[in-house]
Length: 149
Image 1: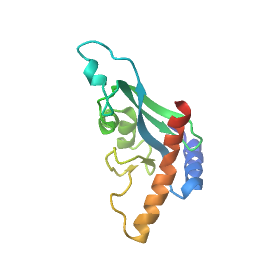
Image 2: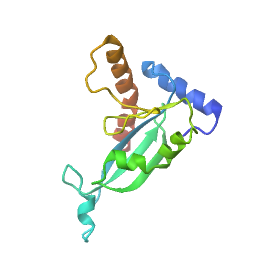
Image 3: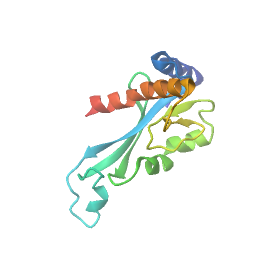
């Protein structure tokens, strides 16, 4: 995550230039990294909802597709929101270390005053504009995972 005011502003400008979403300093998501079965009494904890064994890895990236924060210790059965709720990045936002800034996540995350997620059923022009900007900007973390894998 950005460590000083200048870095924070540069990251925000980079995100804003994508889809006009202001004050974003990171896109967050989780991805499953396939592993072999641990073959012990804890093995089933690593079986994810798609049926294979994995770690569920959370990452935050900036507008340059650089991973700025990651958590790679949770079994595949753990939900994205649980990983986030137990992460340092959540604590940093809740302690106002990134005051006035946003993370963009998908529907697997809770909506918070610093974590913006897509709307369930956008209907108004403003909601549709928000949705397009949020999804378009957040897509960078999907591209990061594509490159990583």
